Length: 589
Ligand code: ARG
Image (tube, rainbow, N blue to C red; front, side, top):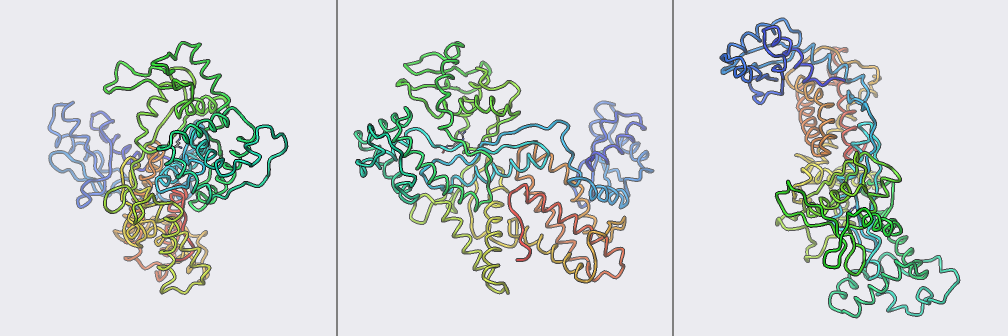
């Protein structure tokens, strides 16, 4: 379906043409002086330069031609040559009626369906998720959903950090305490136990200790590297133990991501490309792409147009070990072979920006990646505490995501269960739903690249630019619709009519018209915050309408039904937006 602003622009384009000017001057935008008009066209100003005429003259001539247009209820020329426009009720309602019956409220299906891979989450096995993992999960999930909503295919891959020294460290530390377990008996040929010899809490204790120790204790570090090598060489006992680490850790990660309403299609990890790395290295050498530099194997990726220093992309360290780069390049190669995506989108902290620039250039230059495949890195900012420094626990430690979520769930439960008649069970489930919206909206409403302050109190508030406020608005609409149904009405049979009752009614209708344009923009820019901004505006204009208009008490049956249909449309749009953001509203709250 056409965009509303395009439709308005068409009207003014015709007027420009009829007045003897270039029709491309007839672009209409939302007014930046809402006190003066609803829409505006500034084409006369640009036209003045081309036609060497005063803009006011052009504007007046165009306004004259617009007089008979059905689209506008008022056309006013303002010095030096603005054309201020108000839309007519008929034109406006006609568009909203069309939206109401269109698929996805007027968001078009793509001419060509594309395949996107979204690489997000990126947790490391055996380490608990901390607050730094929130953004990748929440933004990545939303981007995946936006892509799907737009009618494309999106494959979400968690890309686990499940290989390399971090695994060797856990194994080495465990080995020290359990020397005599079969996993470490190289002559053992039987089956290994099915049951893991540790729990996730054990792992969470082992890893940080081992990691800290390796920085001070050289012998231990050597042992961890030896364990890493044995694991990577495929020594059976080490592989078996590693499998246990993965299984225990992944089960726990699934639980945590479930709580965030985040779902991956692929649970692949760095380890999955281990076997293809030698072939890839060979290819890079044979193709003449890689060369030795101080013992390390590198690919030069700098370009003449660079304004900053872009160091070479390292493929193998001087001891022949692979690195983070190596696995990412091999993963690109495998993704091409298995999925041949049109685009791969990565979500990580923005401090990895240069790193991805190197990897992407290397992949393109060497042909590891198909020329048509777009590689996109979305680097996000830091989650800060109220003091403006990275979010920490009260005693200065890293905040575990699980604790943070539990804490907000608990606070929300207190809020919801006081002063409301709800069973304990319902209050628990409602507060979880609302808490999730607080966390996700608090994050997503910021432009991804910016840092933001995680302000629990503010995020949880039922007023202002927050998730709970949006949910509250949605619940309000649902309850009016329910009341209408209880009184014997059927919202599905209600129709929007051409009648516009008051100013806030018109503003609501105008906000609704921007939906398809906003959604397409959010997709083009991969920017969930655009949906958040729209949703917040929509909620505000809806609430003004609600406060100024009798809905259920409206006496004119046709008008009442038109309101109900408009509420249903508003609800549908809100729900689609929330679906794309990755949270939902309860039935009541
Ligand atoms: N595991 C990595 C980390 O903790 C993030 C992985 C991001 N994805 C990627 N393809 N490199 O930093």
